[in-house]
Length: 80
Image 1 (cartoon, rainbow, N blue to C red):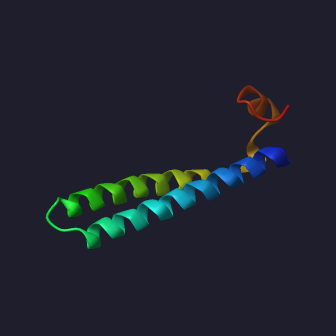
Image 2 (cartoon, rainbow, N blue to C red; image 1 turned 90 degrees about the vertical axis):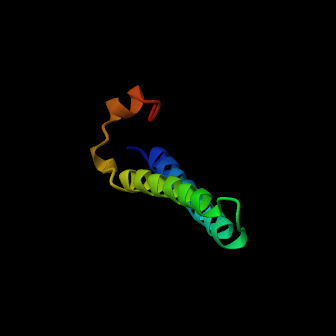
């Protein structure tokens, strides 16, 4: 995997973590700031989405970029 592709992967992982943090902040605000409108269920669902993104982030973190071949990268829009 070339340097450009590694940088792009890093940026994707960073953005995904920012989304996770924002979702958790929203869920926390909904869970603690509202009453009587199903806030617990709403906050719980947002936390579930954040957990799913955390799972995806873990998968991205487990990619061994040294094993991504040039031909695979080219076939999937990577290295030219």
